[in-house]
Length: 349
Image 1 (cartoon, helix red, strand yellow):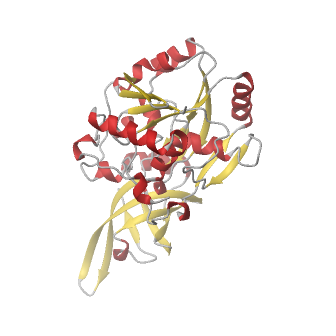
Image 2: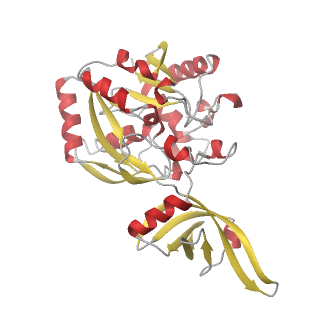
């Protein structure tokens, strides 16, 4: 299975840099096997039925992108350097792993000042990532980060425009609860309270799980034989309540439909022991064609990058040729792609 099997040509103008307004006005490509229907997210109820269960990732994106100054006194006197930081994972006691650019301009023991309230000291560098010890912890850190930080927009958006105040609302789901993600579960960005209420009224059920989406979701696949790719890991949790709800839907013959690849990866991880149930920990599950799905009966997801692990995931669910037809249709019909783009609802044959 070659990386080129998951490649396609995408016109640059189809990369969305802002979401549809309102959220539910985004377009929705519905694929039932090879049958394709063009719709809107606001029409989602037409394609669901009583007893379906949508699995929602309730992770909350933190404003993880920080810009600060490193000050140094040396032979040349007082000098400073602009330092960009993307927080990755908390280690406790105010210490975070982080991507730092340019890393060569910051030495161990030096401080980066982000604003009058927030600063951090570089403790160490491990495998190209910095360990930053912040001057604040707990609620004080959360308040300072919210004031100083920007949303960590994906590289393909950040290359076109900087994050701004609007992104703090746009790049967050309406049901976000648990802080920890540095990327949004973007299929869920299409939902608002009114749509959720409409679906609930018609008998669609909801289950919340948590997977803290990491920056690794944007890492490219660098091997030609995709089966040798090493997947990044992310922390997730399927609670006792979530496991019971999903199991009950499966037992009653209802469809379990994760909203987003993160929710799908998590519930399939929880089934890898041979029986679906409560699960918590780091998952590095890699889903590519040939994968045997145990839980998911469909998937709502956005349109993904060429040669990405997410293209491999949807190809595993729908079949490679079917996905190629779906993406050819989406490009010809001018669907908007990636995190702020349009959505698809996929049901395999």
